[in-house]
Length: 104
Image: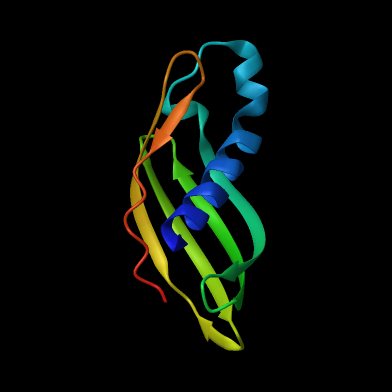
């Protein structure tokens, strides 16, 4: 569930960032570059633990992203980072390889 949440947040950020280029219809990894911030507030199941996530996704335009995150999990603050590959197809669809989330 945790990995799914982070994946959804990252995917949503990518879609928002890629919208102007999608209209052009000729996309590459270079189309998605720069920093994109986001915020999410969720409940971790089954315990019902509240979590807020503030993050910045940085895309290098060459196929690698870095996630710099701040988690507030029921008052406990953590600052995980992560990195992984992404691919933007010519039709402006994209995929990301999001590693399993090791944060409880």
